[in-house]
Image (cartoon, rainbow, N blue to C red; front, side):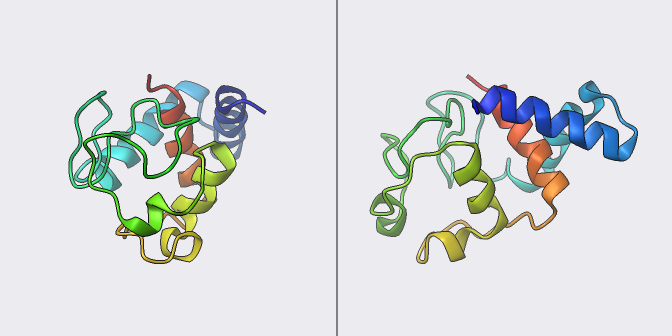
Length: 123
């Protein structure tokens, strides 16, 4: 399933579970990103902060974004960011990639779905 289809499915599930529309669920993903992720990650291409830019993250090999500070653990992980890998990473980054510098985890599946749906909108 493509990232866009998975994100849409996640948004619809989130909207049905909470009574929110898909548009409201997308706004929730953006809000959560701003609250939990934006201090370390930008959403604009070419802007790296403590963590790499997440613009166009889907399909990118982990640890390969030029100009970003990346741990050897992430660089050597062999991961490619797709919806399943991003979901697992956001749930428990240090469990999936021991030695990563990523410290924020989203244990709530609905919150992860919302953030993933928001990330799918980024180019």
